[in-house]
Image (cartoon, rainbow, N blue to C red; front, side, top):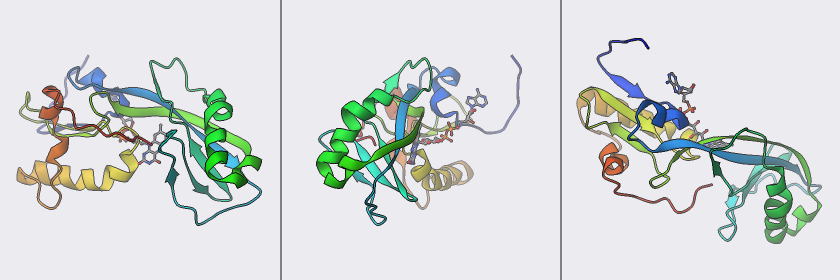
Amino acid sequence: MSEINAKTIISAAGCWTKELLSDIPVEPQKHTVFRVKCPKHFPDMPLTGDLTTGVYWRPEGKEFLAGSPISVFDAKDLEPAWNDFEELVWPALAKRVPAFEELKLTGGWAGFYDCNKLDNNAVVGKHPKYDNVYLASGFTGRGLMQAPGIGRALTELITTGSYQSIDISVFDVERVLKSNARPEPYVL
Ligand SMILES: Cc1cc2nc3c(=O)[nH]c(=O)nc-3n(C[C@H](O)[C@H](O)[C@H](O)COP(=O)(O)OP(=O)(O)OC[C@H]3O[C@@H](n4cnc5c(N)ncnc54)[C@H](O)[C@@H]3O)c2cc1C
């Protein structure tokens, strides 16, 4: 245990946030993404999600990436959930895009979503219990997309005391401490 003095502290610890701040329910949630190859390619296909199953896919080079809707807490390892591909992801893909019946699985990987267990939404802003602690966490699978806006907004909050160009106060820490959920129903 060591002590570090700082004027301002920003906790951006991703899925390990709860280990640092026990009142913030952001925890690791294992999520698998599969790589597949299809004889017919659709390079212009947008990121598409099937709302009935939660399966999503998009082109990636000459292949596609497809995500499983099943994400699990307390995972013991990061071995991809290969069974989910056969049982859930492939059937969903083939139902929506008949050409995907012929696809081949070429790879896959798993990682941890930084899941905000309260409502699957980000937790960003000043922690009300401390004078100088800020948070940027809980992006639940959307952290890369949201990062530019979050970085800008948090910089404004810290340097001027309020949001200037983007008001992201809906993600504030207080709502989480008071369990005021702002649920995100569809997590890719
Ligand atoms: C399989 C998968 C697919 C994804 N796909 C997408 C996608 O398509 N689009 C998208 O927008 N997002 C996606 N995400 C989510 C995205 O990767 C995350 O939301 C994002 O990486 C979170 O960034 P972060 O900087 O908040 O946390 P991280 O990138 O997790 O960084 C946290 C850092 O804090 C460090 N740390 C933790 N605890 C401590 C400590 N006590 N002391 C010092 N350092 C510490 C860690 O080592 C780590 O470097 C995906 C995630 C997964 C797992």
